[in-house]
Image (tube, rainbow, N blue to C red; front, side, top):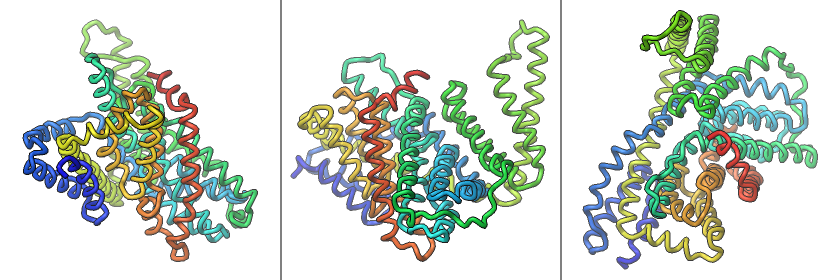
Length: 516
């Protein structure tokens, strides 16, 4: 029995999580219990737990993961200030007269919100409360409408900036370094979040295209499932469309452009995104709108000018032009600060920032507590010999590297029925990805197909998070059965998306190779 403690430990973890006990405490509790059980029966050296302090310090000082609360804050500000609602309403009126038009608008808005917020729960709830009742009033089949809303909301996990991609970048970089050490390389290469953001862009757009093709095809083949919306709704004017779309698009370009262009680290870009979201929320609330608009223009001009013509005022050999440029940059920065303060006064007065900060703290605490507990779990699992068992098992599967990856993808898919993406990412993936990389798989391509697989975990019954989010926000006439049946075609589309990236790896590797 002692030889199988590692397997028993994993089974105990699944049971503890399914019991409904808080996830982080379940993971840590199982780890501590099996650490002392292994020590008592002589299967584990308990001094291995001394490395836990180093793991805690490594997590706290990890510059990559600092971006998570900032990106979460960015999304929370956009959601609490109802910018997402305005975008949904405008796009719904723009496409509503087409057969399947409301479905198209929900997918497109989901993609835009994914690139500007990255928060699945907020997006699904917003669309469930705004778009779903409109689709039902227009005569949409409840299953189709539920499936579209659930799936469009999960795009925040694959389209950058995404919390999943940040965690995956950290996991895959560590696995890649570990694989290089095992190959005898000591001048190891690391992988960056920017590379994973670049790698996920094209596959994310492929998934959006698959969703749109399905909605259009179903609208043609089964027109009664997705009739046109009420024609009495006024079509939005050009200024309304631009006013709803341009601010989120500018925010996306500011965040992703600064990362992919090499101007900022993900953490710095996350700070830019949070500031931009604050200014967008403040401008929408009415007061000081002109001041905020001028300040936003000043900050954009400052970023572009400082990138093209940097000035270092501490140097002693500067000419008059450099001093003039420096004075201009200072003036633009002051204007920006004034706009930020004006936006902050608006969101404080409306208590938008209070709700946004509360939800940011809650989500960030959950993610970091799970990562910390997973660090304890993986230490004990390694101490009980689990890592060697997993590596030996993967290396001896029939089919070689392809067989090992196929089995891993199936395991991750089925785990997604019961576990959250954070738990799978920080518990399971560190155990299997070093071996998969050693077997010859490209780490960036591997990370992206795993990301699409993990995104699917939000849709798989019975515990898909998107299903629960929509169940809480949906009207009474939409049943749990409608939601479960509605997502089934989209789970198949996710599988097709994985297959497309599997057979055409350049979709995930071309852009990061070209940019980095």
